[in-house]
Image (cartoon, rainbow, N blue to C red):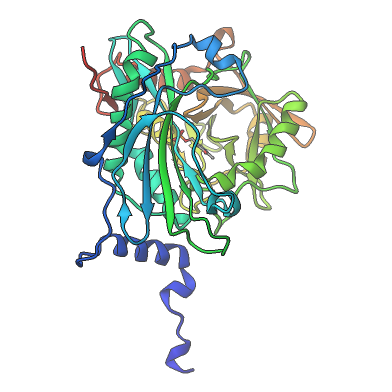
Length: 410
Ligand SMILES: *Cc1c(COP(=O)(O)O)cnc(C)c1O
């Protein structure tokens, strides 16, 4: 065999190789280095018409998401890099109908909440993780990379301007929702990596969805539909993952369920619940030990949720004697078996939108798995403890490095 027949690394491992190449480019240090995203260059144009701040119920009642007065935008061009980011009044974007994102799904986003703490302070929860994840998602769909810390600074800058009025000290225990977004904007229908892109950050109201009364009811995904697959992009928060999943979710809702439990492969591996990660607490087969189990990250099927990671960390650090944490593949058949043997103790979905939400039922191929709930239809013991710790950090009842305080003028 000729030496040229030896496969190159990128022949076998394109996703990894392409991202590495992109990173190398973005760190090139010749005279024509494109500008990096730089939060210190942020310019401020404040609105002359601040809108009245609605209360939460009113804001969430309409068909349109209500955003705060300002947004941050930053434009990127392949030749020059990132232009100075701008903080300016919230309003429509201007895009050509040929813009890349409108045709080829060159779009990724993040979602995180900003909390008004019981101590009066404003906090975001582990924003470094969202910023790092957004960079990873951007790389996966050939959008420009950036230093995650700069994105984090831009989020903080926007919240410093809009936070005090839109989430005032008189509303402890409330939150707003941050949506950093990156889109390919090049107006060129050729199917190629866009040479122009726009980053924007908005802050919006979001309905409280923590816990449907009686717990969340899941319907397993239909056999002819998968959310994500090995070699795909289920691990990236790219818009292309969500549109195609809406049909199954809508159908499940029609039948009285809240979310889809996405199964994968011949064996029906449990992956995620809607756009949340999924956890089960059970008595482990064999030794009967109490175990918290969730799908692993290594085959890149599921999203590396900030809430998921925090649940795992909290369970490992603070519930060490009470529950063992396991990240491994597990199947719906294992849940059916555990249910028949009375070993399922609790289950919950974990993500920014629903936070930590107890699951009371899984409907699978005509069969119901009924999962115990805690007293008064609340979360069970392990779920409640984890939720308590993470919630305390979010709302400043516990001072912790995960809760990043937003500076505000007094
Ligand atoms: C956003 C998201 C999650 C939750 O991630 P968090 O960082 O905890 O909000 C889980 N799964 C999918 C598919 C998601 O899009």
